[in-house]
Amino acid sequence: MRILIVEDDRMLAAGLAMMVEGAGHEVVGHAVTVRAAMDLARAHTPDLTLMDIDLGLGGSGIAAARGMRKHHGLTSLFVTEHPERARQAPDAALGVLMKPYGNDAVRATLDAASLLLAGGQVSAIDLPSGLEIFPSEPKPAHPPAPAAGVGIEMGR
Image (cartoon, rainbow, N blue to C red; front, side):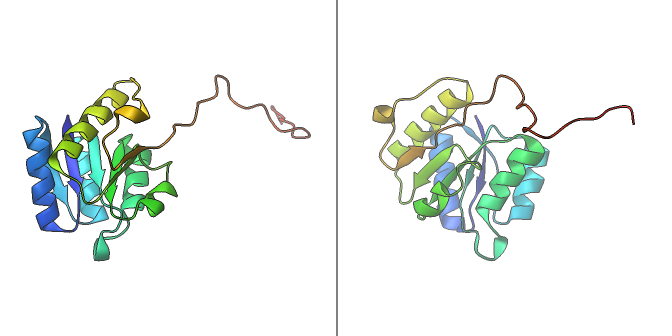
């Protein structure tokens, strides 16, 4: 997979990049701000963004993940020491990998993410410690009908 890392701590980002590449994936870039993340996402179209939630003065990783999904159709996975904040934004990401994490957890996380992005399923039993996948909302088969009492007039 092609992976974008969005992390304001450069040491953590470098270590994560080494783990990602060691697992056989390509790191397409590293951003420390929302703006840089959006620019890199537009330029490199990653398969997955590993997104810290708190980018310090660089902005909100939750907002960045929502923007990437909305404007570029990209999937993010939160990587944070604040899983409670990540759980409040299940619409923005695939799930959350909690800090601290190790090489085995990163490798297993990327394996699970790759499977999910390909349309597969993973069992909670198979997830590494520290990884939580958010439930996906089922998409309706048909558009919702107008609410009762709401009429649609055409040709006026």
